[in-house]
Amino acid sequence: MKALDFSVVIPVYNEKNNLPELIARCLGACKGTNRRFEIILVDDGSKDGSRDIITLAADLHTEVIAVILNRNYGQHAAVFAGLEQSKGEIVVTLDADLQNPPEEIPRLLYEMDQGVDVVGTVRQNRQDSVFRRVSSALVNRIVRQTTGVMMHDYGCMLRAYRRSVVNAMLMCREHSTFIPILANSFAGSTKEIQVSHALRKNGKSKYHLAKLLSLQFDLLTSMSTFPLRLLSLMGAIISACGIGFGALLMALRIVYGASWAAEGVFTLFAVLFVFIGAQFIGLGLLGEYIGRIYHDVRGRPMYFVESIKGESVNQTNENVLELKEGRIE
Ligand code: UDP
Ligand code: MG
Image (cartoon, rainbow, N blue to C red; front, side, top):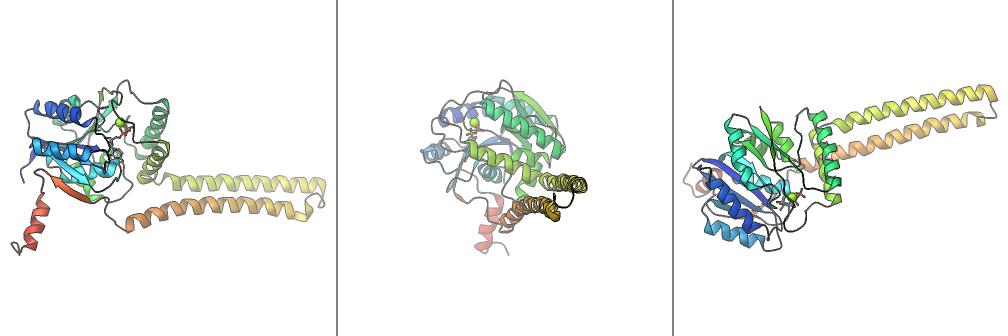
């Protein structure tokens, strides 16, 4: 397997109109670095003909590799599929919609040359809706607090990772992953640089509200047991309220007599409701974690690669082939 200096991994989902410019600009930017590179375009089950453009690009350019997934698995699964095929010492990820200019790739490489494991980016004059900005600011804050990793912009996928970090990520087979944060948990040193951010030229964002919320929820639960801690905290608060309420009822009972408190029935109900509430919250949260365990224990692959075009048969595949053909004992 010949090692390359860097790989660019791009997930593509219905980006037909962006692809020609993306491929041209990426090739231009990468060739300008005078390093050996490959561009891996991962088709995440597009239905608009993006797949044909990617396949054609792989035929036309030796540097381009097309990875075609058999259906839509989501952006992060698609990036994983690309990472698995990548051979570069450095891997750069990028969105296909040209919101992150490919011309920034050399700057990322320059920063990697300084010896860091991960280079993250912060979008200057970010071109997203106010809702997106607010929600991502919120998530960045929570992630920073719970994981202790200091990065300002997790939403920006224009990032560079060292091979060791990529290999570590590939060992993680959990489903709900968020690559930038996963990478940070394996990175010895990280750096952030400012990059420009453009408006989406063609097509719409693939993330609507529900998908965005689910992503943020994934992000939170996949990285920390903070919700579990929240459970104990809420339990404590609810119990305290119950005790306070009980004390109040008792005081009123002493003042107004047994007939006021309906012979203690009020107190009983107050206490009961508090406990029932707490139990339900606890059950809900436990259910969430059990669901995740179930999901991961099943160990289903995150995706199936349908076909790979271009020169990207990796070593393990070759070995398996040789093994099957009896060439290796
Ligand atoms: N994408 C993908 N699969 C999906 C959704 C998105 O591969 O299910 C790709 C998409 O083609 C783009 C990148 O992920 O290259 C980011 O998507 P988008 O621009 O819609 O996200 P946003 O910039 O709005 O966060
Ligand atoms: Mg985008």
